[in-house]
Length: 297
Image 1 (cartoon, rainbow, N blue to C red):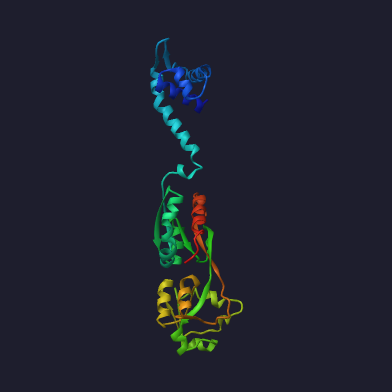
Image 2: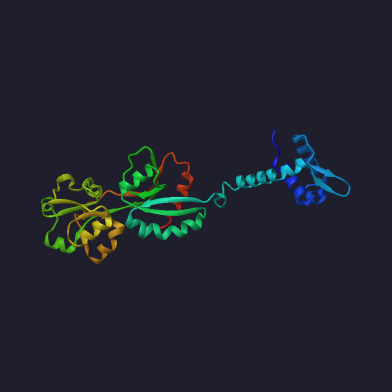
């Protein structure tokens, strides 16, 4: 049989004050009820915890030995009560993976707000590409990642953050010189993507009302990251499918123009990805909910 928390609380109060009447007041019990709590402990342990006379109260050897253990037990009980509250969680390092462009424009500005809302978290950022981010989450090199990459891995789970829309674009100067208005025109253009599997271009290629597989480009060029693709497209080095949030200002200024503007490209979602077997799911969901409060920019 284990001692009750309330009995241990009474014992610690008596051990500190060495006055049963004052100790009973400190825990809001009558002296009789307080004395009964102490007697229950002594009966449980089979030993006297206090030596009491009409003039003094002293701890016995058993009582002295119990004091540090009882204090630690009460502290642990207090921690258990706070488990469900953020303030009671132990400090935790959280490594969040993100693409370079998204990380700098959208994630980094939210780090202070995240730690203010969840002060037990120490946020670290890792910058990488989509496939690299998923690999690192899977191998536990990072804790989670923000990505719109396709999830085909049963070991990974995710929470949606924001919808990501895409546009097929080229530099206005390039398209004025070499229009891209029909599938045959593609032979005069380079297609720029993150890698040769064309993960971005598929949002146009697989669009239900688009020209589909009929476009044949002169060359496919891999640039690794979407900001590098954007810079190459702005320079007139090729055409590409890019996230709308990234090139919205370029479209407004006229530096970029839409290619096949009547085609409604497929969309995707940014997700916070983590291992399905990670016990910190509630933490990831809380982080995702906080991130989702801020629009993409």
